[in-house]
Length: 309
Image (cartoon, rainbow, N blue to C red; front, side):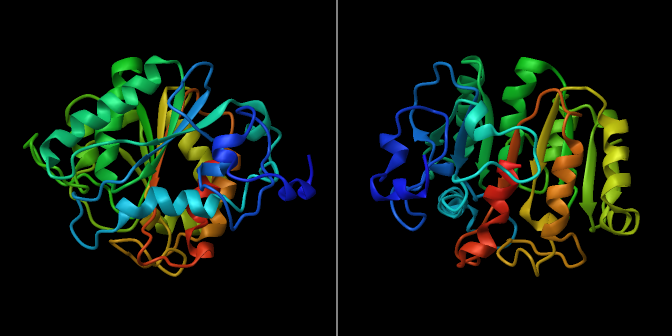
């Protein structure tokens, strides 16, 4: 397979012969599945299912993350030609990866959404596959954690964010992106003693026992020291990784709905991923991207590049 295959490859999201390998169709054409993986609901033999959750009805400021899954898939079309740089493994060749499409829900029945999403993720997990989720506002992490905790018990969480998402909220019917981790800790889905937040740069009165490595500490001590601290906290426990795009400085991700100035840069994300390698026994991933405020593909690249790494 080589670049000349662009002459014959088209819509590999539907026409590729298997679930492994590269895709060489033109980056600017064709159906935009994530990394040109096959669109399918068949989970037989699947290692990893990519799924979108186009939900943003829980935000406190600018909406738009409902367009995130579509934007991330489009940006990922620049990436299925090669293995990820600097890694000893190659997920495109080594894993059976599919694009499972988006979670279906009734946008006018917001109260039903959390249970619909938990069932959506649980169906994938029950088939023996893992998930990488394309958001979507950060509230969606709570229903996803519910599905994972039902399988693994209380989880560790590695949470990249500018905000703690620990606003006190004991009303189970409220759907709020700023309270998802509060509810996850309070309902026993997450073990705070084995969880850590990275990049925080907003005020929280009570972290409920969750460890915090704020943006200033990351900047001053660097990637290696930060990851060493994360590994010490998480150990070999079952771990869910979640990345809110506003963990990045607005200069790198201006499209976020709740921008907070003050580091972290896009260049720091890859060393984090590479250094964390081998320290997580079971991981899932969520992150978000807003399309309307992030119109150029280079600004949307953090989404697919983070997932690849």
